[in-house]
Length: 225
Image: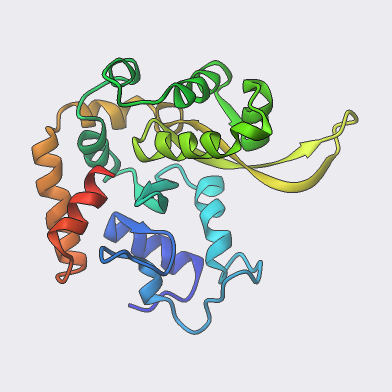
């Protein structure tokens, strides 16, 4: 089925369950391979520009997550499939347990704590409130990706800066929140009933269905980050 509009894309994504966000499917799967001729990147047309679709799903829906969740790159995961990836990535651990086991960096903990305290924050606000300097830029961005890959943090929209008069200005900035804040408790209760082994089996079967040529090594990396 050819994807020629935003509506086509969301229908195809809900059917597939997940997809890398760009044209490089990393040997796994990307819906970009199904884009028709009418689909064009960076035209700012909300119906036919995939760059606009990233934020449309966050602005208009509550059943699709978008973040850097595959190979440190962007990707989509639907609410139906999110519990399986949670079970595979988190392995039943809370953030505190993962941090105490040395699986989360101190920089990442600082970012996560800010989001817990503020519900959601834009990229610039996170840096400002956390007191991150220009020298911290590389570690800050790496830690933010780390939190997304481990599925503790996700993108939840975009936001422009506001002047002291309340007027918006400048470019849109990505807004982040905890995964729990984004999806609510039901998704996490479902994840708690799935073992990492079961999650691996179910996701692997779906990847093989979407891409029979997918290699085992690539599949494992997509599962566990």
